[in-house]
Length: 364
Ligand code: GLU
Image (cartoon, rainbow, N blue to C red; front, side, top):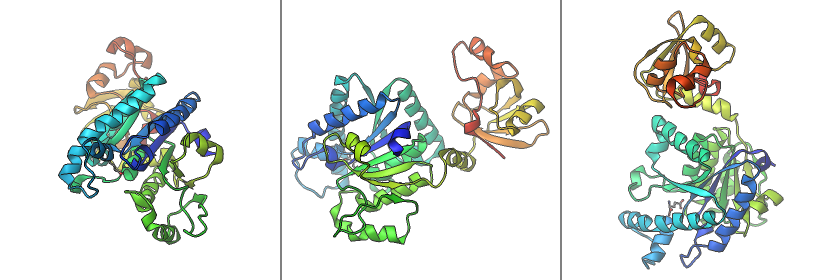
């Protein structure tokens, strides 16, 4: 079962999972989910929750029944509802002594690579703090043209950025059905082809706001990022525990390893102006698949921050690799040519020993 092996898991929770038909938050359900999460966290798993429900809760709180809302009205309602949503998550997680952090994301944050790197760092630091990031789209400022509009694709992008192993997309059905008549759940999908799309068309009207179409879009993003995605029924109490025990869901299998996907992403991303020049020994080490250490760095060019995508130039002046630096240009200038164990002394704080880790680097 894929969940047992996963380290980083993104849970996508739809409005219909957390908010009931009267617009009230399903606290009992949420408590049961948090219990499941706590159990799996004890096995060392990390979680991110992408939760919808802001607009629905804002509607309930403001006593606005109207289903079809103008965008500016739903923006205002999301602003009201988001507070209630996060506050309820906080209250329930706090009972189990688990911290949460809120991240509201706009498409720019995930589609622009430099911003995506920043977002990734925030996630990583929240993990370091032992907090569970609770994510939603920044509905209050996003207008129609610049909106995801559904949290399916947003959750897939988050999974991609943080190199999650699994995205569990909780829905109100058991998975992708072969046909609406026999309700047979497709077990595994290796390729999203016409046949898979035909299953969706059969069931078009039975799904919530995002629908099965956007779930397939999300699955495609995951499959190309080395991440497994499940469509599972989130309506039950203890939904995660139930999924782990029964494995009733549709699994979409990745087409590439997440490391390969990450490297593809590094190569295709917009680089900064930063360059690091290295000596013969370092370029030999890089060719052998090693990380870049400060000892082999001879010169730094340009100003850059940690997390930026920079070029590595070898002793003959050739661009030999590209990678995401774990140090700023200012820091590298201080530690270049030195042994890794001297970094902490020079900088005055502990940090990584590799300037660019091998998993964050692609040889050119
Ligand atoms: N971001 C929206 C909300 O929180 C929901 C989007 C969706 O239904 O996927 O209300």
